[in-house]
Image 1 (spheres, rainbow, N blue to C red):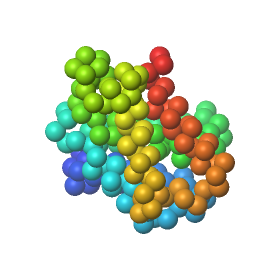
Image 2: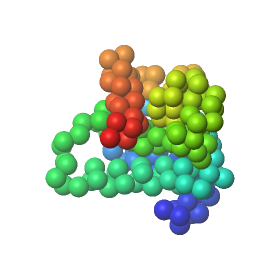
Image 3: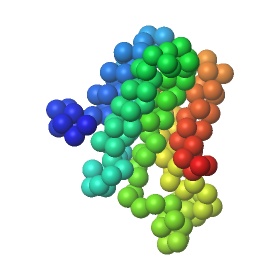
Image 4: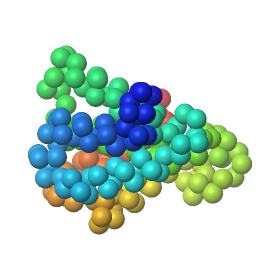
Length: 169
């Protein structure tokens, strides 16, 4: 993954996400504007802090790659529908967005503003989600705008569950 990051001029997340969306036919199936999608994913990648040693865009790309690897396993063929794949890919891309490099316990113990905002509950996960969905809401980045409302709600709910999965286990 480090070689891939270097080969993509430190844009591993954007390149891999675009590739997977094309590979799985999500762009065409969900009538996703490539312009909006690119703006969203570049914005997400830029929101990862390169000075954070682990929770950076290379880590997000690594998680995304692992998810795509598992999805490609023959035993899982047909198990996930396209909305599931869309949700999995987006959740993988945003799951540590704007990570400060400290864990929830530290943020809570130090009275960090995010801990106060989220009442000490899943502080980072709530921040990753809220910040990412705020970007998605902006007209220039809302690549899911063509989804019917019920599909958008399904995708949003799935992404929230996926990003929060770790916290509950």
